[in-house]
Image (tube, rainbow, N blue to C red):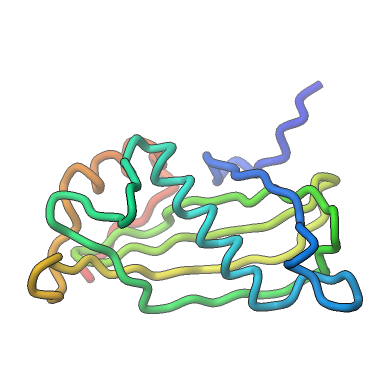
Length: 152
């Protein structure tokens, strides 16, 4: 019997446990901490695709800035919970792409969902630029048919 709890549309999962400094006095994860969970999972996703993350995320002279971050809270996570953070890039445009994230407890309980939109900028000028082709191709290969392309 498989213990893989990923829905078919997610090809990557990052696992972690809720730590003492991430909860409030009720032993519930503080709402802002979920964005840290998302950040950890996005970085691990890129590392899983073979991109080196050393001090900054930079690919072929491009850097990446978050322009939108959202979370929908479903159930509270608590101290000691084992969490699976499912990550995928669901949309790639010309200069931006969108991550979808879903946090589930080890028992499958849906905790939180999120979406993050990232824009590619030139490392020197800070202006938007096209997504590096190596990133685009790697993500398209990894995500397959689950990814939407748009002109933005």
